[in-house]
Amino acid sequence: ISKHFYRYDYDYREEWLGFTRKLSQQTPGPAERAIEAVAQLVESPGGALWIWRDGDHFALAAHSNMTVPPAAAGGGDREQDAAFCQSVEHHQWVIDLAEAGQRAPVPAWLARLPRARLVVPLLLQDRLFGLLLLQEPRSALRLNWEVIDLLKVAASQVASYLALQETTTALMTARQFESFHRMSTFIVHDLKNLVAQLSLMI
Image (tube, rainbow, N blue to C red; front, side, top):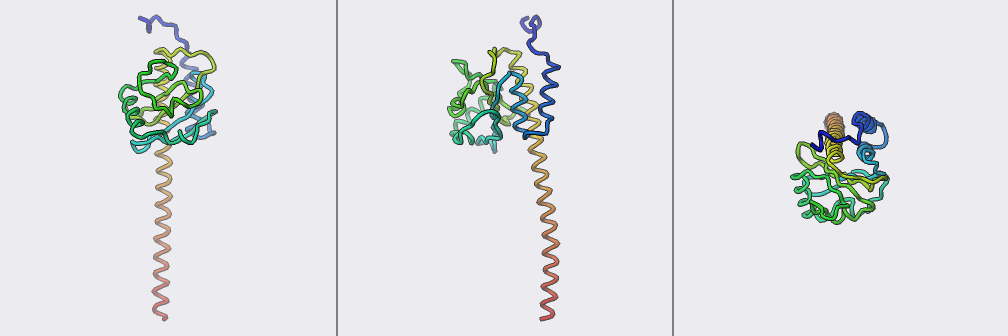
């Protein structure tokens, strides 16, 4: 009843157009654009994004209008981070750090970041791809089902977007190595011919 007779706070057409425009910009990098695109949905001034690497640690991908201490760039205790990731992956919660009784045990290094407010999981095919931390919004934020649904949909798009960027980068690197390997094979072959000719001359 509350959903069907609810007056929406967002014009979803405008929000989605703005979100898509932000992701499509050329600068800054893709991770920074992802932070800014999600942050603008809740009027947050900035945030930071970590990617869950190799299933055992966080790696800071980018931050926007926010200072991240070096101690937090690689996450914290790996066992605690893994337990937190399993909880977030299972429940798929958007965590409000301003809540007194949080639903998931947030790692201390994450909760201590300056003006941290929202932790948005980036899920890709129901697996945790990364975490997006948003700072305290400029205006009062009421984290209801509408805001949570909007953030989850945006986070899903961001996870797919960043995964595609990483795959493209990995493919380009592999192609560069393949070209280098092919070139080095030709060079070695030519050197062998020269060595053979010199050996015959000697």
